[in-house]
Length: 50
Image (tube, rainbow, N blue to C red):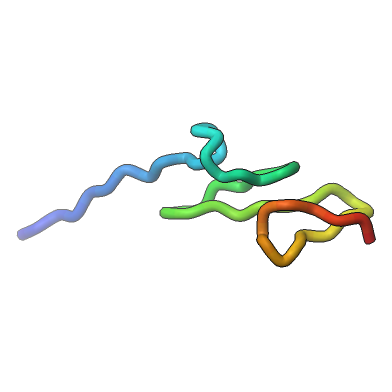
């Protein structure tokens, strides 16, 4: 019987995400979000005014 273990690195806490405003950690990755009145830019990291 084999077990697979991995450690998820929280890129948001490590400040390596590059998100301009909000960062949500996901399993094996992260997502950037913007505050109300802004939307995520094409680079998926910065926010632009709507």
